[in-house]
Image (cartoon, rainbow, N blue to C red):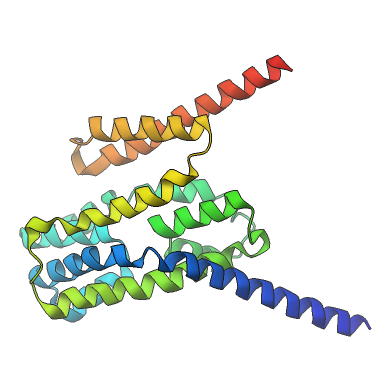
Length: 248
């Protein structure tokens, strides 16, 4: 009887894990059209920077970060040293450090292998969809499976869109500014999550700071805006919690 119970429990666990995986995959699919123009632009830029078609695919697969890829190829096209180009791409993606800090407590008990998976596929969409899942309280025991479901849709599709740009050639006019579709899709995901006054204050403060600090060198204005918005949100949350405690 004990062996049967263990087997049944293992089957249910596997089913729950698969359900979480496919839930993450389904939620990602609706955002994939926004990847097409930006991915194509990155693929074209990589070829024009001298990486070649297969180099463009390698950058998409290993870097897996549109903004970093764009900056990297811009620097290479301008004749900058490779080390400077790579460093600039890393600076642009410093917001991932903010994302890492946000999920650090939730993955503190994960194994080293699991942490590598969390880190490897941490991008804007996987982060925000995982945060939305956490707020809804769904698949709490299988968060990594949900996260990997998101990643296994986003990562291959990002490589595919880069391939379209790399092999189709530079046929997308730069004047179209198609890379702006990615921030728009991110806004569409974030706005429904702004449910409290602290959330709204953090978003508004971060947006204002982002515009005000846009001219800071090496794109550090984005990181400063993230930190400022987070601090404002925490202060507002603390203020209203204390106000509620006093009223009680």
